[in-house]
Length: 213
Image (cartoon, rainbow, N blue to C red; front, side):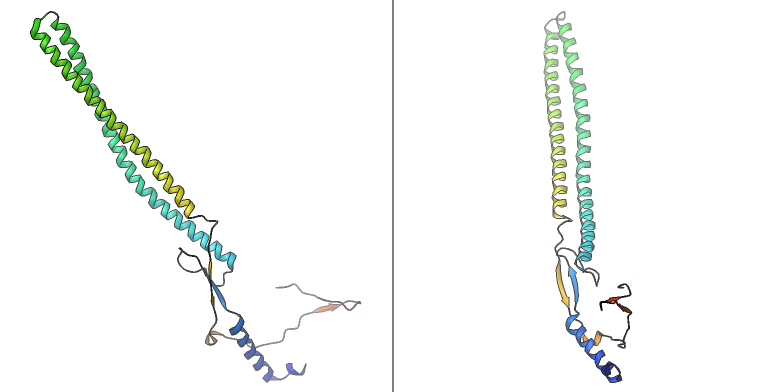
């Protein structure tokens, strides 16, 4: 066609193409609330979701590690207290056994030793009873610490479950921002004509002889 023969026509085509790009070819940038940054430029919605899903997974794993570290310190401290309490129970139980058998021996001796030895035996039973009370208190303290440990582990499990729920990787919210190009940023190369081979069959139906790029 004659309009494709003149050089000035191509300058006009280049100007029209640049105007078209300015008006119709804005860039879409995606971001996700709660996550930093934008998806890489040129990403479509699906690619943006993949990008932010990975960021969300990394952030979830980081928060999970922080949570694990925090509870690990608390659990370690309680376990140390439990070991100390177990040692105390063993010590108090040993002292109670010694006092108990000592009292029994005093009673047997008092049967043949008169009033003085009987008085000693009675005092021995009193000490044994006191030692038994010490054992009971130590066992209660140990049980309380074990209950605290169970409660702490349950609390940690609940927080991890809530964290996984908050960072649901199937729920990726996207916000799209349209960025129109600036004319000063648009660079248009020379406009050229490209001829592509087609074939027309006997019925006059045309079909291309090349694959789409």
